[in-house]
Image (cartoon, rainbow, N blue to C red; front, side, top):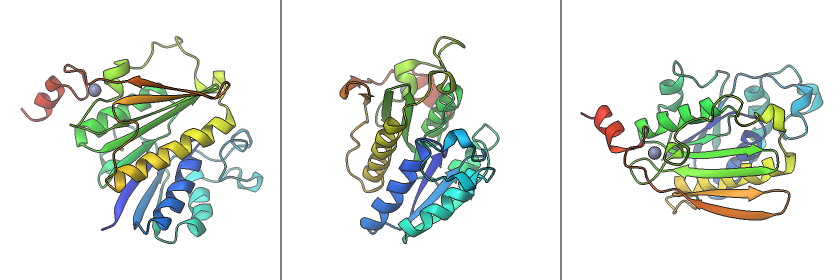
Length: 234
Ligand SMILES: [Zn+2]
């Protein structure tokens, strides 16, 4: 049976995650439908960490360039390009057939919207983020554990934390986190226990230190708690 993985954001995390997912799925002989979602075009400033793009790709849609580059790496992978933005108007359609979602988007609000949509639809989510030299992943298995909102409740107030564009993003750490996201998605797709379910795995790129922060389910979480579930299934 073909499985579907949806990658939101084909930037510093989406590029390595997509490449490794293609290679891993093919190595495991897992037929995979890989949906790439991003409405951005390749810019010169992307090239240092968004490893699927070259100088001559500038101006092209990221999802189209990525699909071309990935094709040789995934003989068993059917790649679909979706040059759209994840938002309330596109969410249901983009996630309709997903078995797992990999979130590599870079806006706090979008990450929580993705978390909420996956919790509501019962879709497994691998969340990844890098800011400066710190990276993290968390796997959300709806109805079987905690979610991003159980830990943080919601996006930080505007200005409380620097955005990726302000703090910068360490290119090598994008490779580490993107690879960890692909490995985690493969574990979800093949029925193995997720390593980052119920715990936020944090990499400190400057020191090489790795930390684990337990994330307990919040019974009144706005995305996955009892009130939210009752609202969806009264
Ligand atoms: Zn939750």
